[in-house]
Length: 442
Image (cartoon, one colour):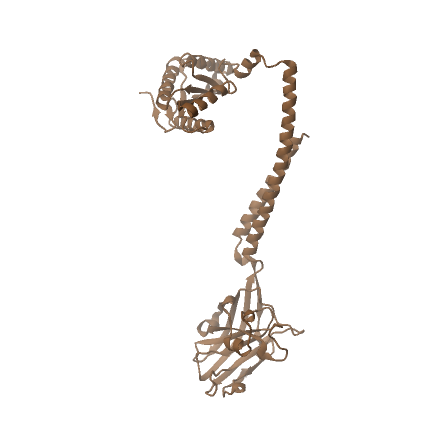
């Protein structure tokens, strides 16, 4: 296997990997977020709990169980404390005394039953951390707090974890530094539900039924970062690899070129006879693509240096395949030769008529603007229609005409080809310019 063949196969494998990466990337971006969710659920009556009033802060409010098994309890708020309350505290630590880690979740859904006059209940997720927690002192747990509207909790109220704030009385009372005053959920030991801050008296019945936390298994931002990093690594590798292959190929080409130059010198191949053969189409005697290069280059230089117009005509014999299929390739070759000779007799000596391939010809018109080239094309079209006959039928052609507007031969070719395509679309046997103007027979 040659070095170039091996390189092509290797690049093909790389392209397959890129295609696979593209599919995976699209899948990652398009994957529904619900598919990447995980959840954690707490049913409070499966954990030890106790209820309390505000007596220990000088209040007179009282709490008592209505059904301890289902953790349904009642509170009677009474004046006495500045902010009267009752609460239930649920211990969610495990057998080792370690709280639950809720830091990876971004949403909490809470189900509860409430009867009373309050519009909100207060929810605390009390976290422990060595920076502030003192073992044995419950009040040293961080009070991550939120007030929830009671009208929605019966059917499941969704809360965002980022909406929790740390209770101000806890920060001030514990002289907590600013660095520790943000919500934390890495070790929640106690879940506490209190009567809300909007009521000061009355009877209230509360039952916390279920709490469910949900969050992404992998954050979408992390997935996007992975995709970006993967593509960056792949692109770097591919560019490095292809640069390496390009250097090998360049070295091989230089070696081949040196060998050919040595061979040409030893065999004296650069003779006029071989040069003419290399530039001429064997069937029609016209220039071929190699032979027309010098004229194309001259047209480009004249346009760039002297602002001399340079136009290009692509000619395609209409329905030529039908001639070959119906009458055979020998008749088709005769038609090509006759068409070439007919057109060659009509163009200027400074123009270059070329057989571009198959039934397609190209006419490079030096010092010829678009209107002049268009007229040349129309004259050729008319002559072919009237004089080129095959088995009693006229042979027609379609023409695409363009003129140089910028120093780019490929752009000139493209414009002429687009005009030819337009001529075919409009029914053939016509001339179209790059501006999609056309001349048709009367």
